[in-house]
Length: 413
Image: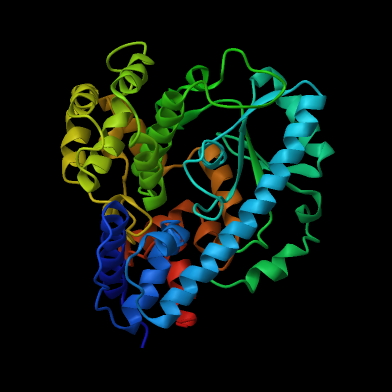
């Protein structure tokens, strides 16, 4: 019998909260889960991007199939990291030769700082930041290492290996047969950014000038400072919280980077804002981090960003759990980011855009529909009217997590 969404949701919640607690403070006792719950635990670990981290953090082993899965995922993450690192070296050499300065973002930056070792943290793709005036040259650099542009969304342009472009993509058949989780065979995409920005949910929060180093030189450059990197991770986490797509990996990134920060570094981070209210969006991710790892963030920092945060969002954040605002939540709220609206006008515009999506939203849906996990569902190809009717009368679970759940249940070993 196929388990109900409610049964799956309970198991996802159980695994998500347990893994969050284990990464904060490992315990010696394995959970007493049944076979179904262990399968959903694998799905939860993949959804949150922490399977290789769990392999090195957990003090208990669990069933043999679970341990084998962790080891396999650690190995595949390492192999994929080596492929990504090789591509990044090619881009760096080509950019230096052509006088192009860029910043490798998020996961690449964390690895470069030694926050993670190879094989610890999955990386879906390579995120690069260039100056707007250098976007055309950046595309030429990527073309020189075998990449072509295959799409674009409002945040970035998407580049893939030339052999993956077009209908004759040889990877499609391979990807359809890959097992659950990380695998080195997935093509390495590049997302090219000219701005560091999030829509929360409509108003844009941008920190580009705080990220790009002032004295950038041709080739690969680090963030302006570790405080700027942390600020970017906070903004990225805020964007994912607003869309209920937070991952435990995002929270752990914040924890790893925040743990060694000194008081002057925290003061530097707060001082990056032009006004005391500049970083109002930082409170929800910092509050969530404080919920799972109390004391990691100085209380004075939390108090400062709390005061800048709108009351409704501040109240919501005090009671938020990772499950509720992550991909482990199967429900599809009508207006998931309503609390992030900072004015009545923005709320009205947000409701209007949820009912009648903008061309940019429809374009992003088209990009998502081409992803492997989305291609097996008709949800992404349906008209807005049909989607609304199905939501009103059937309340279908979210497609992305259910795809992972189905893979986990189909392959229990």
